Image (tube, rainbow, N blue to C red):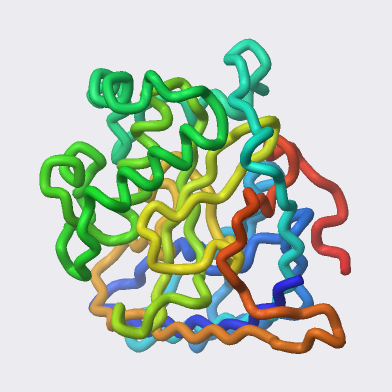
Length: 299
């Protein structure tokens, strides 16, 4: 088991008029990611609501803040018990067998123009045997072809842009891999979270974007940027692409500073907790096909 403890601090200055915020910063309760404890503080005494998505498992915090400073602080202690599968035996699923809830992850989306990458995907990966290994080949191709460089892209950068520029940050790697998978009729989706184990040379801990691909009835984790350890990913949000799950969506005039994020892993083998490591097995931290799962907030 992996046990991770993390905190997120956000700072804003609301100017002139009240501003509306939608935050996606809570750890997602899934069948394989248990929230041991968590806390949230909001500096302004304003009403807030948290809504839960029973399919994707993420939670959205909504509030309207008054002019002046606003600080949001969230921290959580989570235990991850990832499902481990044999990459050699995991197959792709026929379209006819896909649940209706999965179909949106086959279509082009704002940042993943899979329809424009079909020729490239078929020429580059169409000859490979279908299954986990083909998807792993896509992940490797994206990582090797694309240079990771902080600040190298904009919030408007799409999969096509990343393919052409051959540089980007984790969200750009994720969008390109997702688009290539969808171009081959393989369901793929965008995940946001916090990662443990990223190289310090990349800078302070930040939100991390990675990919989940539906294979053999499960959503399996892939990290096309290759900068972190998939076993150390805390799931926060899940969607078609980054447009669905920004950590903060803001309606109003504000000033902000970069998020301050910290994460630590519990190393206590006697209690069954080990540090994240690069596991050769296929990893999944969601329910099969992402269907609703009861009692996820228990334990």
